[in-house]
Image (tube, rainbow, N blue to C red; front, side):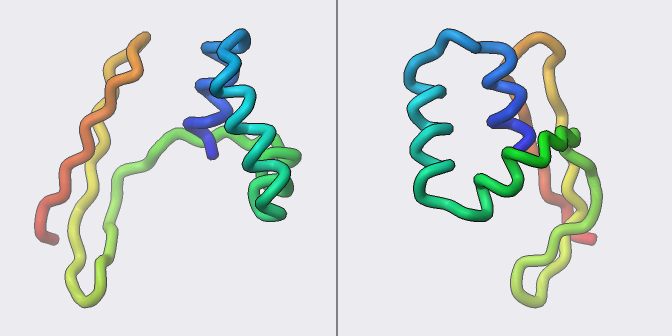
Length: 75
């Protein structure tokens, strides 16, 4: 959600992004609720569990760019 909101702020005139948001609000009650809340949070590092395996998740971003690298390391 935060990524979509941040993109909407960065690219307010992007018609494809606006259409995506309109579509998501139309078909998803959860999206509508979360969008109305207006909460923006950054990705956090920490544990992620997939089935019975737990990994440490680290997210690296490049300031001012739409680049994000996510690494998973066995816990």
